[in-house]
Length: 172
Image (cartoon, rainbow, N blue to C red; front, side):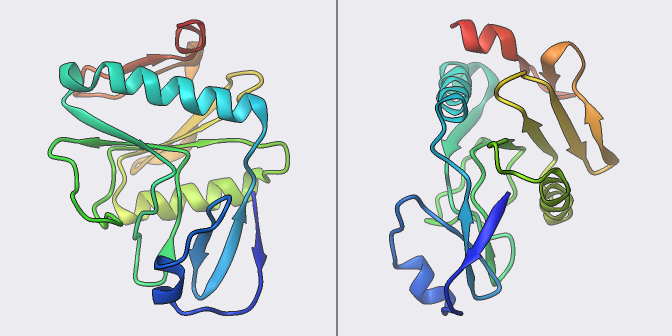
C-alpha cells in the first residue's frame, strides 16, 4: 500500500506543507501513497462524479484525497470519502465520514489495506470500501466486521438511499 519516506517531522510542518503527490502522515513519518495509475484515477474520478451528481438526493458531500485527522498524529487520505450533511467545515476534518473508499494500486498490499480499514472503522467511519479498479471486485469493512465481499459489484449502504453499482458508474 504505502511506503514511509524520510525522517520524523512535526505534524505542524506536515499540515502546512504541500506534497505532490500528497502524502499521508502517521506518527511523525510521511507515508507515500501508491497513486497515478490510469485505472485508479479513472475509477476515482467516476466515483466522485457519481456521488456528486446525487449529493442533494442522498444528502451527502463527497471529496477526493482529503486529509482526515483520525487521531493526533495520523492523517490518512482516502481516495474518495462521503460525508452525510452537514459536511465538516474544518480544513482537516476530525469527524469520521460515512464512507471511506480506497482504490487499489498495483503495489498495494492487502494486509496493509485491511489493517488501515480496521483502524479507520475504529475511528468511527461506518463503511470502508476497498476496490480493485481492474476487476471492480471489492470488499467492505463495517463496525460489525470485514472484509465482506461486495456481491454483484454493487455497494448498498443500509438505512440510506445510497446504492453504487460499479459497472454503471464506469459506464456513465
